[in-house]
Length: 216
Ligand code: ATP
Image 1 (spheres, protein in one colour):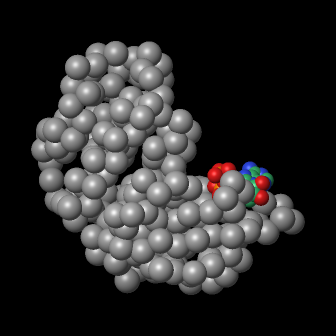
Image 2 (tube, rainbow, N blue to C red):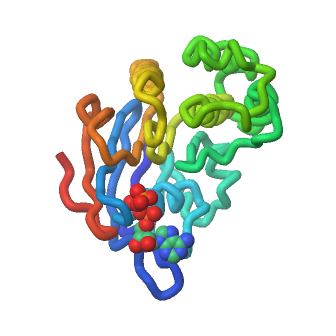
Protein backbone atom coordinates (compact mmCIF):
# COMPACT_ATOMS: atom_id res chain seq x y z
CA UNK A 1 0.00 0.00 0.00
CA UNK A 2 2.68 2.50 1.13
CA UNK A 3 6.37 1.82 0.56
CA UNK A 4 9.20 4.16 1.45
CA UNK A 5 12.82 3.60 0.43
CA UNK A 6 15.95 5.66 0.89
CA UNK A 7 14.13 8.65 2.36
CA UNK A 8 16.46 11.46 3.46
CA UNK A 9 15.35 14.87 4.73
CA UNK A 10 17.20 18.06 5.61
CA UNK A 11 16.46 21.25 7.52
CA UNK A 12 18.97 23.49 5.78
CA UNK A 13 22.32 21.71 6.21
CA UNK A 14 21.09 19.55 9.09
CA UNK A 15 20.00 16.08 8.03
CA UNK A 16 16.95 14.82 9.96
CA UNK A 17 16.21 11.50 8.16
CA UNK A 18 18.79 9.00 6.90
CA UNK A 19 17.82 6.35 4.32
CA UNK A 20 14.52 5.56 5.99
CA UNK A 21 12.77 2.50 4.69
CA UNK A 22 9.33 1.30 5.74
CA UNK A 23 6.10 -0.09 4.44
CA UNK A 24 2.48 -0.18 5.51
CA UNK A 25 0.27 -2.94 4.17
CA UNK A 26 -3.48 -2.89 3.52
CA UNK A 27 -5.30 -2.42 6.84
CA UNK A 28 -2.10 -2.52 8.91
CA UNK A 29 -1.48 -0.56 12.11
CA UNK A 30 2.19 0.42 12.25
CA UNK A 31 3.62 2.45 15.13
CA UNK A 32 6.80 4.53 14.95
CA UNK A 33 8.48 5.09 18.29
CA UNK A 34 11.49 7.24 19.11
CA UNK A 35 12.67 9.92 21.50
CA UNK A 36 11.98 13.63 21.14
CA UNK A 37 13.82 14.87 18.07
CA UNK A 38 14.24 11.39 16.56
CA UNK A 39 12.49 12.50 13.37
CA UNK A 40 8.97 11.06 13.72
CA UNK A 41 7.17 14.29 12.78
CA UNK A 42 9.62 14.96 9.96
CA UNK A 43 8.94 11.48 8.57
CA UNK A 44 5.14 11.82 8.62
CA UNK A 45 5.35 15.35 7.16
CA UNK A 46 7.61 14.07 4.38
CA UNK A 47 5.10 11.35 3.54
CA UNK A 48 2.22 13.81 3.17
CA UNK A 49 4.43 16.32 1.39
CA UNK A 50 4.73 19.18 3.88
CA UNK A 51 8.12 18.30 5.34
CA UNK A 52 11.47 19.94 4.76
CA UNK A 53 13.60 19.23 1.65
CA UNK A 54 13.51 15.48 1.12
CA UNK A 55 14.74 12.90 -1.31
CA UNK A 56 13.75 9.28 -1.68
CA UNK A 57 11.12 6.95 -3.09
CA UNK A 58 7.57 7.05 -1.76
CA UNK A 59 5.19 4.64 -3.43
CA UNK A 60 1.47 4.75 -2.72
CA UNK A 61 -0.73 2.10 -4.32
CA UNK A 62 1.94 1.48 -6.96
CA UNK A 63 2.33 5.17 -7.87
CA UNK A 64 5.56 7.07 -7.13
CA UNK A 65 4.24 10.10 -5.24
CA UNK A 66 7.39 11.80 -3.95
CA UNK A 67 6.99 14.66 -6.43
CA UNK A 68 3.27 15.13 -5.79
CA UNK A 69 2.11 18.19 -3.81
CA UNK A 70 0.38 17.54 -0.48
CA UNK A 71 -3.16 18.14 -1.75
CA UNK A 72 -2.72 15.49 -4.47
CA UNK A 73 -1.45 12.97 -1.90
CA UNK A 74 -4.49 13.75 0.27
CA UNK A 75 -6.84 13.31 -2.68
CA UNK A 76 -5.21 9.94 -3.35
CA UNK A 77 -6.23 8.77 0.13
CA UNK A 78 -3.49 9.81 2.56
CA UNK A 79 -4.92 11.51 5.65
CA UNK A 80 -2.62 13.41 8.02
CA UNK A 81 -3.32 14.64 11.55
CA UNK A 82 -0.57 16.94 12.84
CA UNK A 83 0.52 17.02 16.46
CA UNK A 84 -0.62 20.66 16.69
CA UNK A 85 -4.06 19.76 15.19
CA UNK A 86 -4.29 22.74 12.81
CA UNK A 87 -8.00 23.32 13.32
CA UNK A 88 -9.94 26.35 12.19
CA UNK A 89 -10.37 27.63 15.73
CA UNK A 90 -12.90 30.33 14.81
CA UNK A 91 -15.19 27.81 13.14
CA UNK A 92 -17.60 25.45 14.87
CA UNK A 93 -17.09 21.71 15.18
CA UNK A 94 -19.62 21.12 12.41
CA UNK A 95 -18.00 23.68 10.12
CA UNK A 96 -14.56 22.18 10.70
CA UNK A 97 -15.94 18.80 9.65
CA UNK A 98 -17.88 19.90 6.59
CA UNK A 99 -15.09 22.07 5.26
CA UNK A 100 -13.11 18.86 4.75
CA UNK A 101 -15.98 16.78 3.42
CA UNK A 102 -15.60 17.41 -0.29
CA UNK A 103 -11.86 17.47 -0.58
CA UNK A 104 -11.39 13.87 -1.71
CA UNK A 105 -12.80 13.01 -5.07
CA UNK A 106 -12.22 9.24 -5.06
CA UNK A 107 -13.66 8.34 -1.66
CA UNK A 108 -15.98 5.35 -1.70
CA UNK A 109 -18.53 6.87 0.68
CA UNK A 110 -20.60 10.05 0.54
CA UNK A 111 -19.85 13.05 2.79
CA UNK A 112 -23.13 12.38 4.66
CA UNK A 113 -22.09 8.77 5.33
CA UNK A 114 -18.69 9.93 6.55
CA UNK A 115 -20.30 12.50 8.86
CA UNK A 116 -22.54 9.80 10.35
CA UNK A 117 -19.49 7.57 10.78
CA UNK A 118 -17.41 10.18 12.66
CA UNK A 119 -20.39 11.00 14.89
CA UNK A 120 -20.68 7.32 15.83
CA UNK A 121 -16.93 7.13 16.41
CA UNK A 122 -16.81 10.29 18.55
CA UNK A 123 -20.19 10.71 20.30
CA UNK A 124 -18.56 13.46 22.40
CA UNK A 125 -18.48 15.70 19.33
CA UNK A 126 -22.22 15.29 18.74
CA UNK A 127 -22.99 17.34 21.82
CA UNK A 128 -20.80 20.27 20.74
CA UNK A 129 -21.44 20.60 17.02
CA UNK A 130 -22.03 24.35 17.24
CA UNK A 131 -19.19 25.15 19.62
CA UNK A 132 -16.18 27.02 18.23
CA UNK A 133 -13.13 24.77 18.11
CA UNK A 134 -11.30 27.36 20.24
CA UNK A 135 -13.63 26.52 23.15
CA UNK A 136 -12.81 22.81 23.24
CA UNK A 137 -10.35 20.99 25.48
CA UNK A 138 -7.11 19.67 24.00
CA UNK A 139 -8.49 16.15 23.82
CA UNK A 140 -11.72 17.26 22.17
CA UNK A 141 -9.69 19.23 19.65
CA UNK A 142 -7.59 16.16 18.95
CA UNK A 143 -10.76 14.15 18.28
CA UNK A 144 -12.03 16.88 15.99
CA UNK A 145 -8.73 16.94 14.10
CA UNK A 146 -8.97 13.19 13.50
CA UNK A 147 -12.69 13.43 12.67
CA UNK A 148 -11.97 16.19 10.16
CA UNK A 149 -9.36 14.07 8.43
CA UNK A 150 -11.79 11.13 8.38
CA UNK A 151 -14.26 13.36 6.52
CA UNK A 152 -11.86 13.19 3.56
CA UNK A 153 -12.29 9.39 3.42
CA UNK A 154 -8.60 8.41 3.81
CA UNK A 155 -7.26 4.91 3.07
CA UNK A 156 -4.17 5.47 5.22
CA UNK A 157 -4.01 7.69 8.31
CA UNK A 158 -0.72 9.33 9.25
CA UNK A 159 -1.09 10.34 12.91
CA UNK A 160 1.42 12.39 14.87
CA UNK A 161 1.09 11.72 18.62
CA UNK A 162 -2.72 11.40 18.62
CA UNK A 163 -2.91 10.81 22.40
CA UNK A 164 -0.40 13.44 23.51
CA UNK A 165 -1.37 16.11 26.04
CA UNK A 166 -4.97 15.02 26.51
CA UNK A 167 -6.93 13.94 29.59
CA UNK A 168 -6.72 10.20 30.45
CA UNK A 169 -10.44 9.62 29.87
CA UNK A 170 -10.10 11.03 26.36
CA UNK A 171 -6.91 9.05 25.74
CA UNK A 172 -9.00 5.90 26.21
CA UNK A 173 -11.71 7.22 23.88
CA UNK A 174 -9.11 8.13 21.25
CA UNK A 175 -7.41 4.73 21.54
CA UNK A 176 -10.74 2.93 21.20
CA UNK A 177 -11.70 5.02 18.17
CA UNK A 178 -8.38 4.27 16.47
CA UNK A 179 -8.69 0.56 17.19
CA UNK A 180 -12.24 0.64 15.80
CA UNK A 181 -10.92 2.27 12.61
CA UNK A 182 -8.21 -0.40 12.41
CA UNK A 183 -10.91 -3.11 12.66
CA UNK A 184 -12.76 -1.36 9.84
CA UNK A 185 -9.66 -1.76 7.68
CA UNK A 186 -8.22 1.76 7.74
CA UNK A 187 -4.44 1.48 7.60
CA UNK A 188 -2.49 3.63 10.05
CA UNK A 189 1.04 4.84 10.56
CA UNK A 190 1.21 6.37 14.02
CA UNK A 191 4.08 8.30 15.60
CA UNK A 192 3.78 7.66 19.31
CA UNK A 193 6.36 7.60 22.07
CA UNK A 194 4.27 5.56 24.51
CA UNK A 195 2.85 2.04 24.22
CA UNK A 196 -0.86 2.93 24.02
CA UNK A 197 -1.16 1.68 20.44
CA UNK A 198 2.11 -0.25 20.11
CA UNK A 199 0.66 -3.20 21.99
CA UNK A 200 -2.08 -3.48 19.32
CA UNK A 201 0.16 -2.81 16.30
CA UNK A 202 1.14 -5.30 13.63
CA UNK A 203 4.60 -3.74 13.67
CA UNK A 204 6.53 -1.27 15.81
CA UNK A 205 9.36 0.64 14.14
CA UNK A 206 11.95 2.60 16.07
CA UNK A 207 13.53 5.82 14.83
CA UNK A 208 16.81 6.82 16.44
CA UNK A 209 18.41 10.10 15.36
CA UNK A 210 16.69 9.90 11.98
CA UNK A 211 17.52 6.25 11.34
CA UNK A 212 15.12 3.32 11.40
CA UNK A 213 16.52 0.93 13.98
CA UNK A 214 14.65 -2.28 13.90
CA UNK A 215 11.34 -3.66 12.79
CA UNK A 216 9.58 -6.01 15.18
P1 ATP B 1 9.06 15.32 18.86
O1 ATP B 1 8.35 14.14 19.40
O2 ATP B 1 9.79 16.12 19.88
O3 ATP B 1 8.22 16.18 17.93
P2 ATP B 1 10.19 14.00 16.57
O4 ATP B 1 10.67 12.61 16.71
O5 ATP B 1 8.89 14.21 15.92
O6 ATP B 1 10.24 14.72 17.96
P3 ATP B 1 11.18 15.91 14.66
O7 ATP B 1 10.30 16.99 15.17
O8 ATP B 1 10.88 15.29 13.37
O9 ATP B 1 11.33 14.76 15.76
O10 ATP B 1 12.68 16.47 14.64
C1 ATP B 1 13.75 15.77 14.00
C2 ATP B 1 15.00 16.66 13.99
O11 ATP B 1 14.77 17.77 13.11
C3 ATP B 1 15.36 17.28 15.34
O12 ATP B 1 16.76 17.32 15.44
C4 ATP B 1 14.77 18.66 15.28
O13 ATP B 1 15.50 19.55 16.07
C5 ATP B 1 14.91 19.00 13.81
N1 ATP B 1 13.84 19.92 13.35
C6 ATP B 1 12.51 19.69 13.42
N2 ATP B 1 11.81 20.72 12.91
C7 ATP B 1 12.74 21.63 12.49
C8 ATP B 1 12.67 22.90 11.87
N3 ATP B 1 11.50 23.47 11.55
N4 ATP B 1 13.84 23.53 11.60
C9 ATP B 1 15.03 22.97 11.89
N5 ATP B 1 15.17 21.77 12.47
C10 ATP B 1 14.04 21.10 12.78
